[in-house]
Image (tube, rainbow, N blue to C red; front, side, top):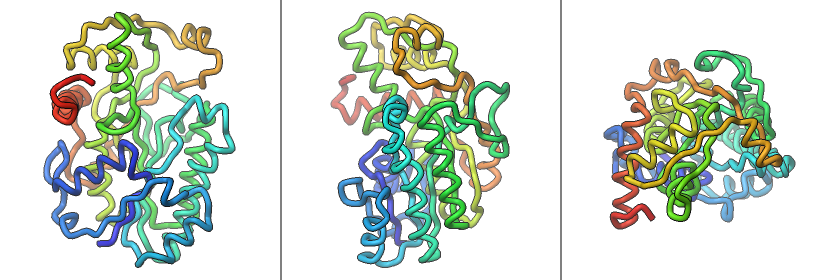
Length: 305
């Protein structure tokens, strides 16, 4: 296989590389087909997916790919609210450009999306068939990317995930650990509920799904739900950090941070459709967090740095 991973310097792209190099994720071994794959890992400095001439030049300069996994995105939710043209370029035009290029080669495209395409106002876990209704610029740009990618390349997997954290890049878990070093208490929203998801678990599912021809839209998250405040508390407990969590409402948070984007109140995703295609289930979120703790302390020399 010849494979391209875009956005390879971020937390998911880095985790895909880690899984392929090791031949396993935290869930377990990945398919042996990946042991002989030739993978190009590229960041935005090498390939700006939002610019079609850049994408065209890259694909002309390389042999045809079998699979392209798109991890390139603008994930700063508040930043997307302030600069929607930039968010649309990264999150909508980027996947469209890759879909055009991959369709020309008959290449599979795996595009990663988000739970934020839903409003979060409806009860129950969201199914792939539920109608999206984003309430933020980030969600709107990601939803546009889903549709543009699917319309340009029928050999596309759209994989929605949620509350992603990993060893590399910025994420909620690492932010909590950083704040705990200088704050005895942190204030965290307690009325937004979702699925904390390990980048290692998601990488495992993406690698498995990309070997199939079951193109379509899937939800991929670790099992179980909690609030952001619950997630913060769990991070502190797992890492043995003496920092307490003050719980607040979304309204209180927005009053204190008026420039913040709106977030879904309940954005948990139902992943049963994924398991009809791939064999290995993603882990309960708390179990995955324990493994993240061990891996994080290993790469940081046994500290919570």
